[in-house]
Image 1 (cartoon, rainbow, N blue to C red):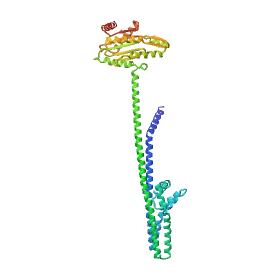
Image 2: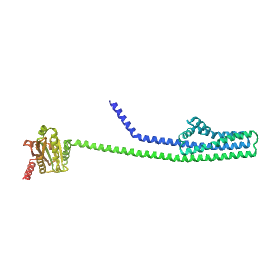
Image 3: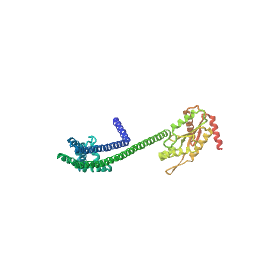
Image 4: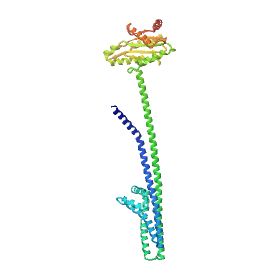
Length: 434
């Protein structure tokens, strides 16, 4: 059972960690994908730029060696012309293979390799052409590239024509000048289209670089914002948890020191406060009142516990009325209440007890059309000498309350531990009444 519980907790923690880091993982993966895509595009564009340079150089070499062959008739010059011409022809075959439906990838690969492109660049050349040939800059570059097809064909036919004429003997000067001039024109036309091709690719490369840089910046900014948002959420969650923990701690502390029914301090809090007051030897006289309801049992028995609870709440509200902030009102249990009155003279303690008795007597309590007269037996003790124990103080108040019950209830009984003090407090109370 323990192992299953531990495994469940570990699984829950693991899922919680995954939930926390998943947004970051997603953004990092997205940024890595964008970065990889950016590198692939830039690498493929660079391969086209390098391929164009090789294409242009080979085309110029083809014209150059064919012109040399035209004037010298040396077979080695013609072989060099053919080798140079094979490069742009290979690129042309590759483009045709990619323009077919369906695309002939293998033929395109062979064509690009014949065009002298590096084997590692060939997949990128094919990928960029297949999936981005509709992009404006690449579309313009392909258009310039395709525009050289008739010239390339003419150069190829021109070479065979020159070889055929040279095999029949020396070429006349006028014819030689015409052929040489035409080769120069072809070279100029090739150069125009090659320059445009290169310019379009360069502009597209710069545009792609700026676009991809912006995308990466936006993605990085999104990651930063996500990090800030997620961190803020974690901070708020932690703050909410701490507030909830603080509230729960306060609630538990309140429950530990208060009576759940009346909201008054409970016996534990009462005894702690009384002990604290007794330990303060420099303080003045301390009044202690113990109050026990006289008819509570009859209310409980005849009307039920709900009525009894209601009566206890009504009594607790009455006991708190007019109390000083430093006074303590507590419910010790059942129908027993107590008050701690710091800095209270014996006369004031007795007077407060008497006023409480009269207020309770005037309290009108009704339940299910039944009315009850609420009275209480009240014991009062005034502690001047703090050199007594908590048990002694409670014993005095309890004895006074018990004697109040013995004398007929609904009365205040004083017990101070000193007959003289009791007599003085009683006389003062009687004089006040008079």
